[in-house]
Length: 132
Image (cartoon, rainbow, N blue to C red):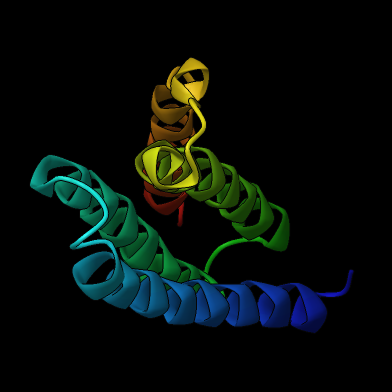
């Protein structure tokens, strides 16, 4: 993947994640209201919020020419894994009661996703500190 292609992928992915965060946020605020308890809606909102934060960061990351391409990709992959595991597991855990299935066994995935998000931020900080 060349530099422009990698940046374009990161930018498009960030925009799509932002779009999905808005759609999921609307679903959580309106569609889930009658289906789950307020605590579950709060959890769902947390997933949406973290997804949106990292969507915005991906758009910024795709424009950070000050970082090497390999570094941008590494950070991007950590964020993508983190969003998928953290936010994705929260979404599934909240709607499992709506679907009538128990997904509580995937609860351990949420902190793993959080760890990937933390690692993405850690590598971003380290990379910025190393800029000469």
